[in-house]
Length: 491
Image 1 (tube, one colour):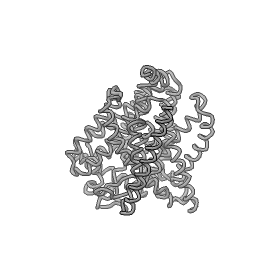
Image 2 (cartoon, rainbow, N blue to C red; image 1 turned 60 degrees about the horizontal axis):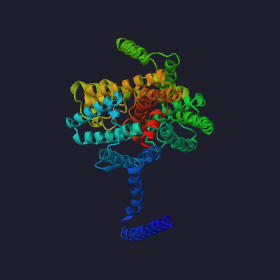
Image 3 (tube, rainbow, N blue to C red; image 1 turned 90 degrees about the horizontal axis):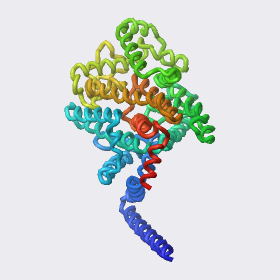
Image 4 (cartoon, helix red, strand yellow; image 1 turned 135 degrees about the vertical axis):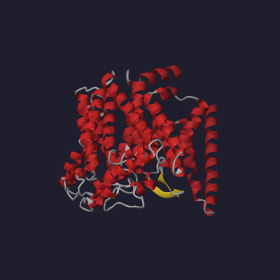
C-alpha cells in the first residue's frame, strides 16, 4: 500500500514537471528562445556526470567519430559538435565530483605514465605563459587539459572494470565503420578517384590524413582480436562481426589514398614480430637509437638516393605508394620537408621555451628556408602545423616539450612490454599488444602528420595511455581481480 502511494506521488510529480516544462518551452519558442528545448538533455548529462560517469564517457567516445567541426565559434576558435561541449562539461564535473567526494584512486598519480603526462602538461602550461601568442597557447592548454583529464585520468579508473576497455574501443569502431561506409558510398559516385579522396569523408573527418590515422589505429587491434578470439573468450557474435569490420577498415584505409597510413600499418605488422620473438624493450630502444644514428651519419647519401625517385603521387595505388620517398618533385613531400626545416629553425631561435603551444601556424612563415620552398609554400604562414608529432612540440615548447612528450611514449611502451611478457592473463597480454600496435600506427604516421590536438585522435591516444596504465595497475595479476575485491569490500 505504501509503495503504491509512493509510486502515485512520483508519477504525479512527473506529470507536473512535464506540464511545466511544456508550458515554459512553448512560451520560450514563441519568443525565439529555441535553446530551452535542450535543457532536459543538459539535465540528463549532468545527472549522468554525477551518478554514472562511466556511461557518459562511453557515450562521448561514441559521439567522437560522428562529430563535426564548426569554425570561428569563439574568438576564431573552432568547436567540434556535439562531442566537445560534453567533454568540457565532463571535465568540470569530474574535477568537482572528485574534489567533493574524494573517491578518485589517487594511486594513479604515482604511475610513471601519469607522472610523465603531468610533467608534460606542466611544461605546456609554463610555455603558454612565455608564449609569443598567449591567447592561442592558453586555448591549446585548455584543450589539452580537458582531453587529458577525461580520456586519461578519468578513463584509467573507468578501465578498472575490464569490460569497459573493450566497450571504449568498440564504441569508437562502430560509428567509424559507419563513416567509412558513408565515405565509400560517396567515393563510388566518383569512381574512387584519388583526387576526390582528400576531403570526401567530410563533414565527419576534416581530411583524409586524420581519417586514415583513425582507421589504421584499429586495423591491428581488430586483427589481433580475431586471431586470439577464442583465447580471450570473445563473444562468438562479436567474432563473426569482427571479420566484416576488419574488411571495411582495410577498404577505408586503401581508398583514403594516404601513404603514411599505409606505411604505418605495414610497420605495425613488422613491429608485432618483436612480441612473437619476445624481444626485450631495451633491445628495441638500442636498435632504434642505432638506426637514428645511421640515418644521421649517412643523411647526405640517403637524401641523394631519395632524390633519384621521381614518381609523383598519382592515380593508382602502386604509383601512389612508390611516391612515398620522392623528395625530388612530389610537392606534398617537399612541403613537409619545408615545414620540418622551419620547425628546426624555430627551435634554434627559442630552444628552451619555444614559441608557445599552438603557435607554429602563426610563426613559421619567416623561418622557412628558401632552398626548401615549394610551389605550394606560402609566405603568409597560414597552412597549418609542422606535420610532425615530434617537431611540432620542439618548435612550440622547446626541447623540454619534445623530450617530455617522448618520455610519455617511453613509459607507455615500457609498461606495455612488461604486460605482454609478465601478465598472468592472456586477455591482458592480447589487449596490451593490440594497443601498442595501434599506437605504433599512429606514431609512425606522426612522423609526417600531427593530429593529437584533434578530438578524433585525442580520444584514441590518451585513451590508449589510460588502457596501458589500467592494465598494469588493476589487471596484471588477473582480469578484474582488484575490481572484484574492492566491490566486495564496499558491499
